[in-house]
Image (cartoon, rainbow, N blue to C red):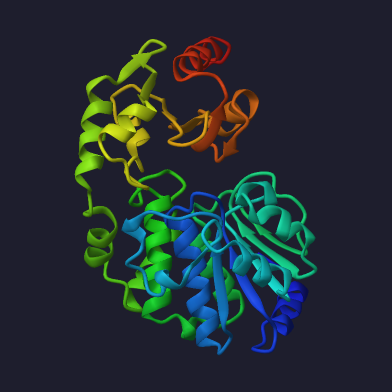
Length: 334
């Protein structure tokens, strides 16, 4: 958490007179949007207006959250996003550890003279004016709740704040099943429920919204899942043509990698997908126990993240990337 002196300094910055914006990472997920909107609603309850800016669009299954339609999408409104970042007095940086993680917004953030406040749970954060970094906490949304506690503002956690933070924590813990989920996480969830977050409604709004394209793609992926490395590693993949054939929509492949990890005996799962528009391969890694996919991804696939959840990319073809992955596995002990 921020030091008491830092909290005092931050509190002096949080005024209606200052222009405050909230940024999160490229390809925003549930924790990115949940933490950003949760913070926005909390600051709104203090009488402080803010704008949330994301580099690119986010999945439809997250657009039920309060004021999600007011999120500014940088790739659609470049000038508006640039003007807001350039003119900001305070910028909250949520769920990313480096300007390189926010796409076209990164250069604008680096040049901004605003005070930059990082709240994030990824490893190896870069320098910001104020840094609250904790890799043990399972979700940035949980860290936002701790920040609100440290500001002694729990009374300002209303239903909108609660719903957004609950969603962020729920999605980044895989429905509270990842090992990083702690007793503290559950206590915070209980508080959010008391403040108006309805688990059944949030779960339904977020996860019971499958598109036909998603189900077709899932059937395709599961039909050819491959288990290698003596049954310890699952490999899943999709081509660009398959995405186009089944009418891929943003968010359709969310969570596919977890199906590989659900196989008995598997300690690591990797999902490889050709980008729909650019010539590179997007990779998602998941693992169990002490299998560190963060280091694996950093070492071999220009990526990173958490010990048990990370991402990466490759400029090789899909098949070559998978073959390279299998060779790298031979150099590691799982």
